[in-house]
Image (tube, rainbow, N blue to C red):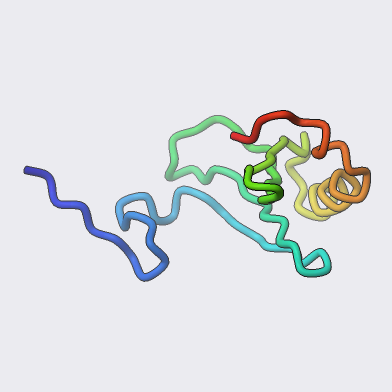
Length: 90
């Protein structure tokens, strides 16, 4: 039987270090920017942005590897409201 160990944040400890995360506060809403690290064995280098709204998680790729440009793309995406047109979250 496998034993699942959880870290203090509720995520499993064996997946620690597989993502980089940055949170942007948007007036009471949190936008989370994240991307895979080399430890994750993923080839994706672009930052992703996600937020939770109306009972669903909305997520897109920023198509940016640079964090400054990814932050701007994330804020622009949130400000545009285009995520409101998505019928389903992830």
